[in-house]
Image (cartoon, rainbow, N blue to C red; front, side, top):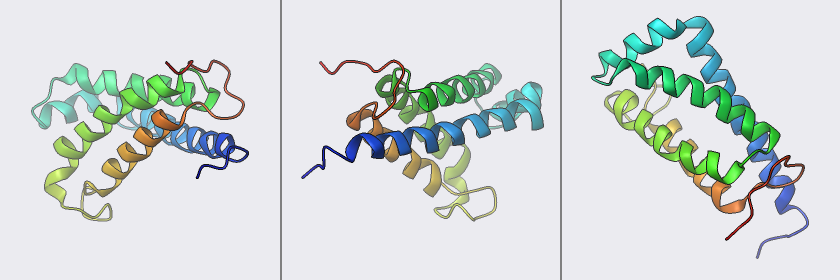
Length: 134
């Protein structure tokens, strides 16, 4: 049974945590690896370089949207294929464990599941622009 008194705060906690992590990942791509380095890494995986730049922007903008509670369900749902893509393209060959050299697929797959749960759970408390359930 869902506790309707605490569920909105659970969704808020998921929004804030995952949003902050997305922003941190995006800013790392922007400020540490640089856009050119990020594009080059994606190309080294056999992906188009522009996809690295799109991922960087999605992480920063989507992370901020999650923190603020703007279209949470949509952002969370859109992040699932991004995270699964990261798991299968950048981390699969590194094995399961996130602590493996290069990071395994454990973390992005778990994060995709968390984002799917957030998409199902909804905006939570203090959302600035919640989407209505249909």
